[in-house]
Length: 93
Image 1: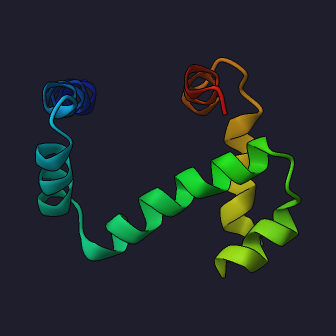
Image 2: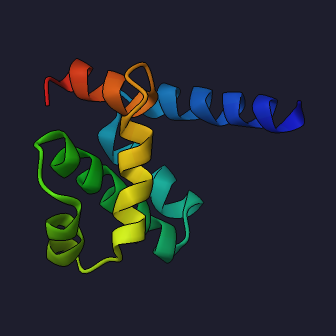
Image 3: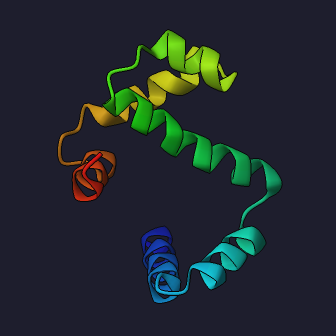
């Protein structure tokens, strides 16, 4: 599928910039819209808070977002072999 190939290419580009934090940040600033630059890091914060056992309502209130946004992250966290869980383990969070 073309989308898979494009995603694989993007992953490779990000991976090649991973050793240069400044380059990676500049690339992401160019790649993403201002809204995406706000939402994507926020999603990661949601996942970290969920991993700590913080209730969804509390997360939504503290981040000023809707519970539905937190619920999406919560659903993804149910997959023990999914990217969020694997990354949390890798980072020892």
